[in-house]
Image (tube, rainbow, N blue to C red; front, top):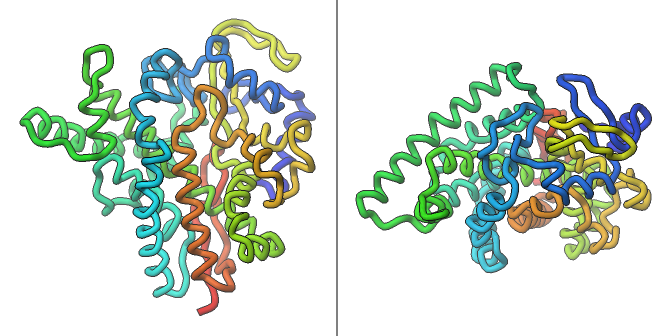
Length: 388
């Protein structure tokens, strides 16, 4: 769980094992904590490949994006890149604004809301639904799957929690017919919709169409990565601002600080604490000998609190230098830097501005509930109310 002092967890790990810390449970792995080592690992896909999966369990090579390495990963990014270019973000901006306005209006009518399930998650999931050509009548199910699929990253092979297994099965049973129906429509000569899924289904890699397995993997990745980071970011940010009224007052009076507040939240309460890589061969990292085929957890959150990189890292401060803040690791680093980072920033900024504009006297309306996933940092529920 996220600590009141986020640096305490990382300090405890470092005290136990230094910047690269051996961990025995739930299965052996090495936690990489120091910023220079995190940066080094993320830049070296040959020694620390991603193709054996981003979780603690060993995956068979052949996955997509965070489960792949160049040149395959480079080609996969090229398929998605047009959907996240500045021109695409500009086109999405009005859509996100309309979506947020509708969600906030509905919340105002109720007089109270759950920031996550009523605002942040529906916003981010609705945008992903648009990319994948999905209806938005099952957003609650999608959010439940997202949290459980994130939780699954910390399970070793053969020990998956039943709820996580059920989430994987529900995802497949929902998305597989969607892809099959799309493929049948395209094969019948129907005009493809103007969405990202249609682009993926009509493209060719090395002369062939993407397989159903690859399409399902893209959908799973986009559903999880496209919604979890943003929804958890918004919850973490608003909660920290409520904990620090001086910071809330600053950003309420000066909206040019909104981007800074988003980046500081990403740094301070990193929504995705880290991802796993696997050592291709025996190596020496951070003073520790790591054997071949070892799992290593690259802890973005620890790098974001490294005192060698950050001044007073365990202080939440939205007035930090903007360029320095952009050096955080919450969207990764190097070749795997998150393509969806501009979209997450866009959505978070629109929603935070709407909250500041339309919910005066914002305050908690109950006890927040943490997400039940060690690899994720944030809230599953965050009840709020405001002055009417």
